[in-house]
Image 1 (tube, rainbow, N blue to C red):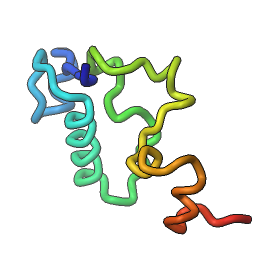
Image 2 (cartoon, one colour; image 1 turned 90 degrees about the horizontal axis):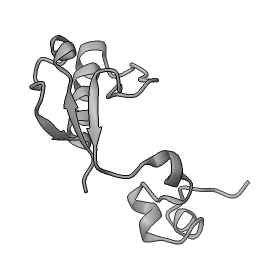
Image 3 (cartoon, rainbow, N blue to C red; image 1 turned 180 degrees about the vertical axis):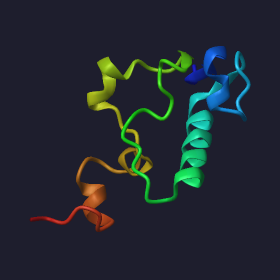
Length: 96
């Protein structure tokens, strides 16, 4: 199941374009919220916390990353090539 997120009604004023109580895909909601922050604060802003804080949103579905994160490939390049070999071939990881 795809990870989904729902805005809590108490925090609706912070996220005007998201309707509270409506389930969105977490990736789409995170992209929208991150884009809104960048437009508001400028492209140099550093987002250090979660884009979708659990105090503001409810989550369902997806994978619990706390248990499985270590072996998970999250970038497209990691899925296409074996570890290290693909990055070397593309020049992204240079030997020291």
